[in-house]
Length: 128
Image (cartoon, rainbow, N blue to C red; front, side, top):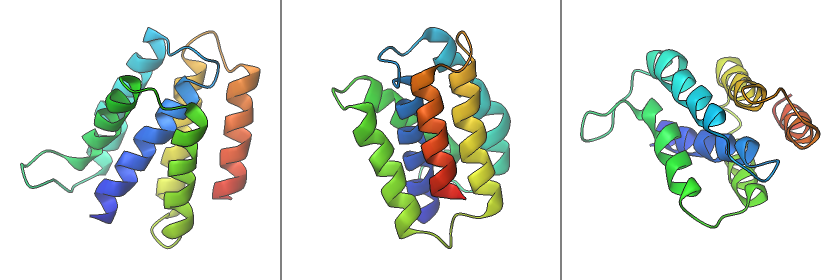
């Protein structure tokens, strides 16, 4: 269950970085989808009760937030809360995955801008 919550929290983080400048671009969504499919799902061996790889929960959560009126700061706080409540779960590999995700999403559309850089720096302080 903690693993599934991690991937949901990671979806919150992905939403926060994509929405940091106010607009979620198609290239950011594509970068997220590629990372989920090519890096997160192969990393994760757990499945939910329906047999779905729980790595896909990153994308599920992102899609849910995209259809909501939640602010990016709120989404980031959800990830931050997870990290603070599950410090032992946040292995170096999971920390690296989290940072890699935000950098790839942020860089996918016209490079990393000022607002995205601020989120990345805040994340680095949180994780390290």
